[in-house]
Length: 168
Image (cartoon, rainbow, N blue to C red; front, side, top):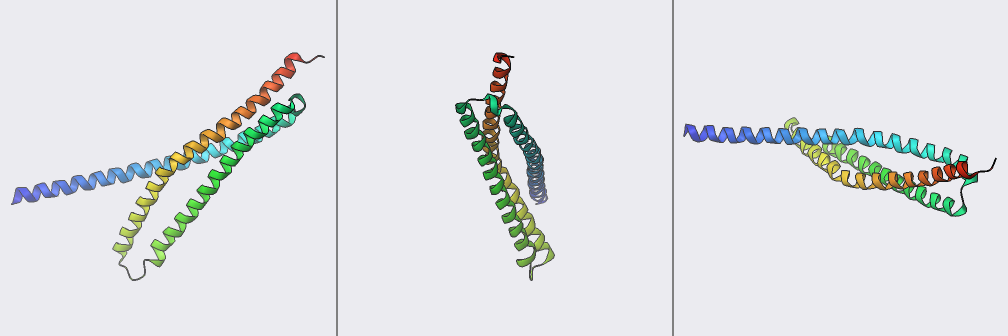
């Protein structure tokens, strides 16, 4: 009987350790996403500012066709970036609303232990949602950055071409 109890306790402890490890890993991945997302936004916004500065300088050196391609590419980049930010904003608002429900509305009449259990379950689900959201973030990031870089490449090409083939 004692061996069975010891084995049962060991299994429970192992499961608890695994659950804690998974919880820590999810929190780490969520925090990493938050930091990398903020950094990526800063870089992208700086890129847009640089782009418009470069475009104003090179506008007299680019052909109509190049100008149209630059417009299309930067428009795709901006639309994808704004689309993603709107979805992210909606997800954050939804998450805050759900957190309010768990902590305030649904907490009425529950024991502190049950409120904590409900909150931990909510937090676990929220963290898993963020991990799923990473796929959309990667796709949007690649599209926004690549189309933005292509448009800057066209502007740089036109500027270099104008420098190399201009007559004094």
